[in-house]
Image (cartoon, rainbow, N blue to C red; front, side, top):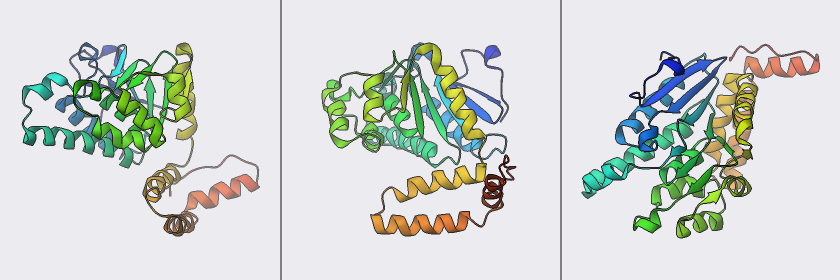
Length: 268
């Protein structure tokens, strides 16, 4: 996928993609609609995450947004326009597939949140592997206030924060601030707004400097072992580590450590 210059992109583009130094950035570019997750935007995101996941020049992906709203969730005009069960099921299934594409992407995905994330917007943050937010950002799952419980956002939310914290957000529909989101584990860290870009770029660069094969192995294993019982998880993780040890990068990394030099990754 080409990497257009964000400065020259038009507001007609659903997303803007750029790449430098093994760090790809996807920017939601619909500020006038509060970056609502329309069917078109979700299709663009799913296609982009799938494509970036195959690129050798990409080691990590940052997801950010233009404007003061990271994402307001589903486009309610689209939802109310045709609320037949068949149509709604297709829309929510599309959203679920897109979120799973992020989880299944072999590249780590970092949400960079500088604004409001509500409903499926909070789900989007929770679906990313890591998330950093400016301390002015806010999060909510307010569907209960509209008579439409945030059931699909609940899936990602409940896999990131404790059940009671998840239920508090889901049942109250109220906003929480970034510091609270960090305390409960929805985001990794809340930082000053003027520090957000540097914080995310620095962390992304750190990940991008690792063996891409090792990172892919680790991310895949992390999500696969989560639903397993303790015994099965350890058996699976032992198999993964034994297999990982057969790679050239593992041999190189250990040798470099013992020889007190920087490793030279081959991603093999």
